[in-house]
Image 1 (tube, rainbow, N blue to C red):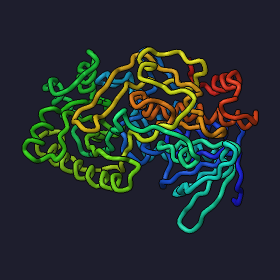
Image 2 (image 1 turned 45 degrees about the vertical axis):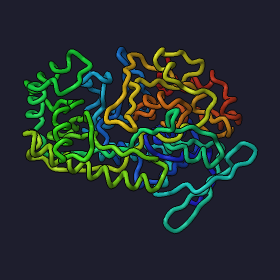
Image 3 (image 1 turned 180 degrees about the horizontal axis):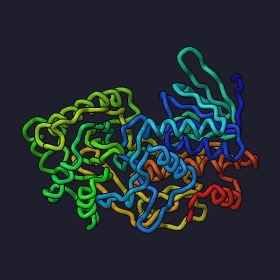
Image 4 (image 1 turned 180 degrees about the vertical axis):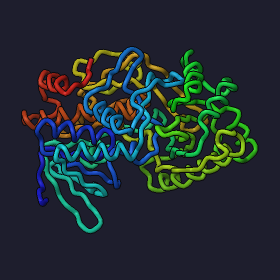
Length: 452
């Protein structure tokens, strides 16, 4: 219980950090995981989040290993519908889930590996000597502690450890604009059959990327299946609500996914533009997006029969799409994602569209990617610190590339790759950038990771 030195310390136990820690532990390493919130798996358990996206490109599954094992174990006990077709065809598949079952599966997997996990523990600072992090100092309610490790992995999403250690970073687009923060809303008591029928009667209110989308929805109604519907639109309803003063937010469209349980939906609607690293902006965003969500629910109850008996189950904590991107040895770009650039040292593949919510406007820019994109080891390796890796949305990439890479399933894949790599760095006693890729490739493949 009083151990203060580990092989690997992972800061942040969201989707990336969770997979990172499990992967490193399965490589035989002693791992300490430190999380600032009160739970693990980030927005998967603390959201709500519409669904985990996405494990497939247009032709195949591109993410397996620990991320896919986690989903399979959730499916086995009724905590997920698994990978199902995206009814609008924006991504190939979506993965709806139950947050509480995911939390149980996550903690079970950590306990199986004898992991040490500290929650509600805030990172205060770190000690750096000769381009290496020697230790981190963390704080809880009544004490501070110092922990040492050979290798550190920053899975905070915001690059908190990397910046404390002196790493350079970028943030926002060329003008410094940052994607808005959002709270998602979960409703119960929604008549999903009524909703599906309404969609079939008003297809002009929605965007569909697949010709089969409406047929899938119709088939779901005929079979009375608890089909996972993903909807993008509600154009007139949002326009009328804003013009009549019922909605305070001017949005052209919203996203809705039916949950894993009957008569449940999760809605992505709210927005607040600001700096997610600023205490005032983040606090104001939390308050304002709760108000936006409540007003939307009232408007839906009054204007769409599918919602007339619904209730709010949860309006979530602020979700951050974009913040720091740490300087690494390779910067992923929009052009690389578009062309499916072949990487010399791939550790994972991502396949989500480039998805950028306008910081100032009311719409969303997007570009579909039909083929998965390789993510190289060098995008996870920080330029300024030799024993520090990053995983999740703070890896080295441009603003546009982050619009794809930030998504949950891809973050889980980079986390798993970082954990495997960190374990090998410990074994070889080398700087992260000096790791022999052939060793890494073999270990990734042994752990069922898809890299090409």
